[in-house]
Image (cartoon, rainbow, N blue to C red):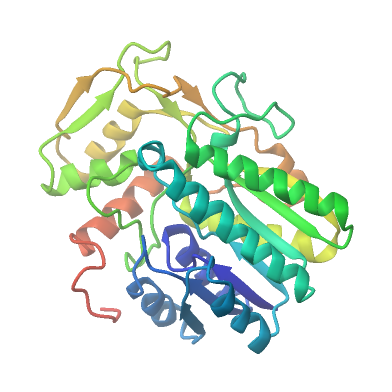
Amino acid sequence: MNILITGGAGYIGSHTCIELLSSGHHIIVVDDLSNSNEMSLERVKELTGRDFIFEKIDIADKKKLEKIFMEQRIDAVIHFAGLKAVGESVAVPLRYYHNNITGSLVLFNLMEKYGVRNLVFSSSATVYGANNQMPLTEEMTLSATNPYGKTKLYIEEILRDLSAANSNWSIALLRYFNPVGAHSSGLIGEDPSGIPNNLIPYVTQVAIGKREYLSVFGSDYETKDGTGVRDYIHVVDLAKGHLKALEEVTRSKGIGAYNLGTGKGYSVLDIVRVFEKIIGRKIPYQLAERRPGDLAVSYADCSKAQIKLNWAAKKDLEEMCRDSWNWQVKNPEGYINQKVGIN
């Protein structure tokens, strides 16, 4: 199939490109590179030995995006494109609403116009809000506590309305938990700009000496060691989940939401201990106050994805951390000033 991937140069997008190409699909990638690097796509080509079309496009630019639909035969879309930092979304909400929602509306309108109605949407576990019991299931009440999460929730609602209005649409809403890890080659991985928003890139930067210590926000939660517990999933397992969702949307109609996680919760200090085992030395950390809005515990019930998509995460926490460390060691400055090529 010919798959359009929005935001395909990003962390999850680039890993999904590898899985799609390795499965024989053809891909067209659009990305404005606002929070990603084209080097990731060059490395995807190196790793797979396959070429593909890439266009630097903001999906809110209807004229440029429509040119892709006019020139390429597209069978399905995987929609990753969007701003994703929770803290930043609180500071600049209008930017998030415009980028994430307006861009999505432009994309969906073009899909409708050109008869492309198979869609896999990159949603988030943030749509479950703060008041549900664990484990989180797809049928639970949805809410969001920050503008980033609200954009995901609103787009899900838009897609439900679209599916109800036109039964020819087939849509998978993939609710990610906490993606971590990197490709086993160490050639593509998570490359945050500035101070990392996510735990594991922060840990690897402390481990490699870029940062002095890890701040652990909250040590008095009702968990086994007082620190927050999350459901971490290897990015390669997550990417493979998109292939399974793609298979589902091309053989059925309607809309469905699916949790993509491991169904297991690990604390911040669990992560620290695994990293210490991998690198053979202590990770310096300091306990700090809780951050407003942080949950004590969040983990998924992934049985629906296992039953409906025939998908389950396979990689354990040690492999997640080992691959994250391998990426960090091979790319201490991320993609900056890196040359393409496999050594």
